[in-house]
Length: 108
Image (cartoon, rainbow, N blue to C red):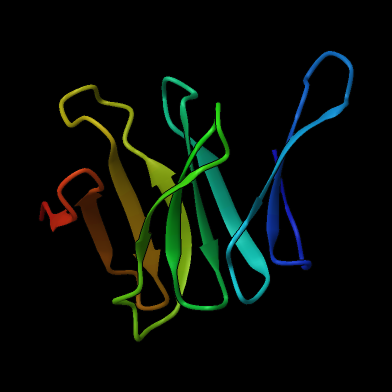
């Protein structure tokens, strides 16, 4: 997987290096990306102040979080297995948020 200044996320075949998907939808450059623990989802963070959730198999945009008036620095999925499809978000002040994408609810 790669992020780009061209506002896309690209998925690649790890063996052949061939492109598999180009995920389009951000309106500014993509600065952080992560796979879910089961590799079925991708999360991306952009300078357009959105966080987006994508389906790896289809390339479909599943959800967009636009409620960020501040800059999000990093995104990652939780690996503890206690929360399904939860997302870790770190902003420029070092504050951490956990979000559950299916419900769009802030967990803590």
